[in-house]
Image (spheres, one colour):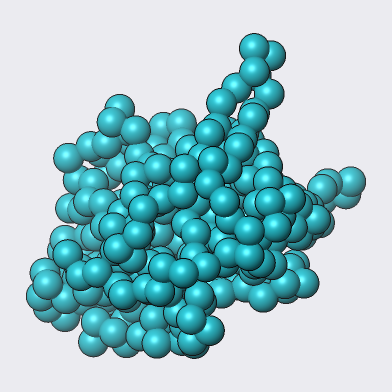
Length: 317
């Protein structure tokens, strides 16, 4: 394993309980130990956190995705607050997955904009920077008034598919909004682009209307930022198969795998579902076609560059 050299003076890496495995991997890549933290529950369920090391004047990075349950959000806020009150010099919230990111606008009367509310809470708690991977919408960076480093898992994914040596691949955008991301995959994999025209009659329900592009007899890759109930990608895979597609691959950064997702993916004509470890996947949500790729080294490099005041733009290639 490559170890990313890091000055140890003035640096502390903390982790909540939402994704301890990823935090351990980041620490291993950086060649440091995780800062000792106590995180427990009172009898009524309230969360208690305590940082068990001196972090005064340190550059603190807190690794905590905000996937459900909502306790993960509260834990992140408490850790940030504890670090601020312990006189940390700078606090960076490392959020491999940004929960509530789909609630980013008022698309109905009298609804909350959860993504903006979460951004406000993170800033109010005392975060000086935010580091994330594949926000649901890139515009979410504008919800913060502190610097945001928005990384992409695409280099990790494309490296995986280059090793597979797919020939004459078609990258299929699961909807019009994903066309830009799919075009990036197609460019990196020397493939062509197709787009699925879909509509959502209700939340978490996708209906494929048309496929724009030639997929007959070719391997297809469907990239997305997340798989929640898997309705979009499974319906897309069936539509592609009806049009004569060869092997169908699916990749997504965040594997929420809610509700019937696993059953749908197992029943769909999909050869492999590649996801990253931004969210820990329980053993009972894993299945034979699932391939989990690590973003630990990517995040370790971003943390090192941020700590040493270097640009992270090289990580986008």
